[in-house]
Length: 391
Image (cartoon, rainbow, N blue to C red; front, side):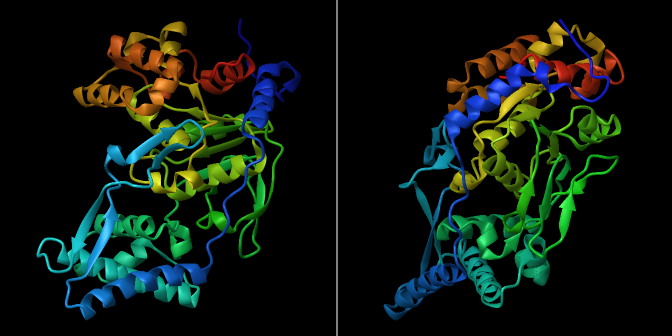
């Protein structure tokens, strides 16, 4: 049984989508962001770190900073309601000021802490890129700054945006959504040939208005742009589309979470049928290892996998020459993902991964064009949404 999208959508035929939304509201209930951390609390947290350092020096002891091991799976617990989150009593590592190996990092942490302190005091903001370029020779490279900022956020138990460090935005959004930015600018994300860039201060946006029946997270910008060109948002109106252009940046994840907290609208993902695409979906849904200390603000376990499913490849009889063999790296990633804690509670995901592993093939979303140039927007997505083709 199939249907195609030819004009404005008659939503009366999408009963399974309506039922899914009703079940989400029952299961998850009203959701809200946690209370804001005040500037005073941020300043006090930094002052406490500095006080400990001064106390150590007064005792003629070398100061030490203690950081949680953010990259250790042993420090992570999984719950279906939150996703991957750091345990309260996790293993730590010491950054000593008297050790030649760790002293440079100790100094850089203090340097960035002092910059954060001044920004919070003066109510100014900077990106991690801005911080790096204050002294590129001192910091060495951007990744060092990125890691230290995350370490500080984890150490202080304060979200990065409350430290007045903004993320560089790469994500885009389109569709049935309007909101007001912190400076009063009104934004209307009407779906057209262009999209709106995800705001750099998601925390500050307000007056969000939408009648969207669903939100579609699209893995790749090329697919997102193709759907815009096909006028998908208007044909399946009202809906919202968002892309993180690959692995999502923090602002894109924060915006998806804010949309979920505000509207409790069903959220679906459209990813390539490959290990990388599955992993990106998992970041949106359950979070990532490195940012597990912020899971409460970022994850949306209610997200569902709409496509492209490995089982769709055979079901739709996609041509073999449109498929790509799994590389050794793909196979290793797939093996690793099948052992992750969230797969145990997702038997349908596990089955899809097993199909991929057995076929030793992967497919990009663009493989659907082998069926017809507009198959994705005209047939595939409408049918998936109409007949409950998500897992």
